[in-house]
Length: 394
Figure (cartoon, rainbow, N blue to C red):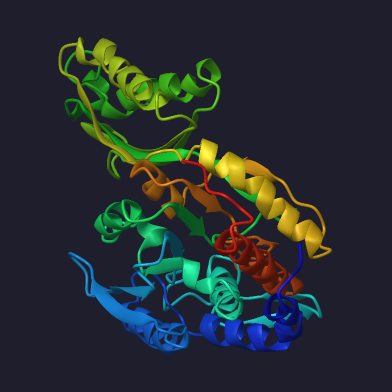
């Protein structure tokens, strides 16, 4: 099968894509920096407006001044795809990590270079190349880029739910693994708060009058920390704990801990929640203690589907036909908006962005040649899908 010239010519756009990525990453867009988010949106809007026939709009989100970017092209075409990305980063306005720097001719460090402004660069370049292919009219698509992925996508959740029902396949441009592999599935994430109440007293009379809330919480956390050993595929991290006061001669009557819990399969959610609740009972049965569990799962797991299993092989073939290094796909512990789309019923290919590592750290880096390489793979996949050479099951 042939490769369209517009896809081949992407290889010549390396310097241009690096320049665009540098410009975007040097604009801070931390999730809580609303001025920076607005400035970043001001860069993305004209860039995606270059797509032929694109209808570009800024969509307000509830409970925030930040806006999502939505792009629609050929909404009446026979096949409809959803392209997903986010433009917020974990680096706030006061973070010292604000500028891109060149590490080697093939590696650049910068805030968001891989998570996921690099993915937005790849997405746009792939769509621009695809629009020049002969069968592009057969595919319509929607691009949805949100400003709150790093804090849970709570504002954009309804947009994903709505968009999922209109499309056949989701293409999520989160970063590829450092090996070049894509993401086959992702763990679901939950955030829980454990609150322990006891009874204050002088430490000298603790056994008679006091009920130590910290000791009760420690007992609970020790038991909770053992749960993953009994449930393969489940992760639990005790991320924060506080309690008591400055005086050590006072029996503390309050303590609290925050838990990060991750599951591999949706069926595990109810079991994990039930076991966390069951651990409360022995402590609450004692006079003077009350321990409570709050929170829950905010993102269900993204699991592979028959659709993604069928088309991933075609995506791999696109890479081989372009003469690129082979890649596979793996299970990832971190969540993305693919989790939300999957929960809404849309099969997703995830990890379509560039290759890099050290995301969420001041050492975040991107492999620069992968900007054009991954754009080529996505563009060729779209071309073959439009030409009928790749079939979407179901």
